[in-house]
Image (cartoon, rainbow, N blue to C red; front, side, top):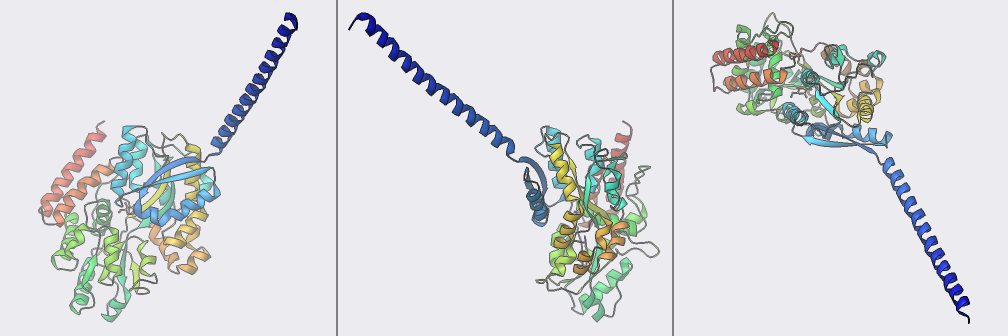
Length: 441
Ligand code: GLC
């Protein structure tokens, strides 16, 4: 073999080796690109996650709405974080997350009383131009008003609330009593039924130091002819005689053993459980309590009536306007998805399901006479009047602080830690200072 031909052969096999390597390399590159392409595709089809914080009680009650939304919107996954049951504590958690920046929440489920503060702080997306007026036509005007701040819309209201007085129809009937109109009626009927051993307790209400105390107190205060803060003039009414009349009513229920001493630690659920166990004649609570009291496992099923709150002679009843809606955090990277979620939650379909399952008051008028709803809850048309005549807690941006002041001094007055007149003078003074500080800015 000549040197020439062996060089040629060597060259040839080197080329073949190179070609094999090249083919291998090309195949590897194609495979890699394919893997990258499919991963990107798969990733882009991963649902977008939106996060929201809500009370543990509402998670339990409203999970079915969130699941229905996810089933209809497979491109969105809602991560629900459970918070405490007191609305003001959930508000604190949202507030600190917004103040710290990079809040993890996309949707903000809001109590009506938080809205002015959250909107004034600039934490919410202005939805005015995203939600046509026609979409709001069916809504109870108060619920839309409670979703606006300075004329701009910041949340989709999906559930409204108004405080009610519940009573045991059977016990009142046995005692030959009519449902009470005045504070005094309630006290007298309670005593009579307690004395005849019809029930251990006369009246259960929300006496704990939290937002529910402020909501309950607004009703008694208005029923006594008084007021807390006038949102237009920022006048404060806590040191007026009507406020003392309202506190006097609540103190009487405690001093005369009409309410259990523990009532000053009760939230809604503690009051409901005691009433539902059959041990009390009257209860102040929101409409959610009625379907539970009438559930099959309730010992007072079919024995419960409801009416507007009692009041002083010559005054009229007031139920505090409560209620919830969903807004969108300005810091959210997924505002479109959060908006779809908020719109679904407030839709007729979602609200109907929420009413049917939980008996919550809807924000859409049509549902109060909806055949399915009325078939399940024949009392529902009466609830519309209740929902449309509720009394506002002052819609001011400093509401959380004003409410905190009232809660502290009122709780001290109710538990006998402070003289009620002194407590309300101090509460009025602190509230005036608070409001002046802000109006001076
Ligand atoms: C209910 C009302 C809400 C109120 C709260 C007080 O959730 O809807 O507006 O602030 O009770 O506990």
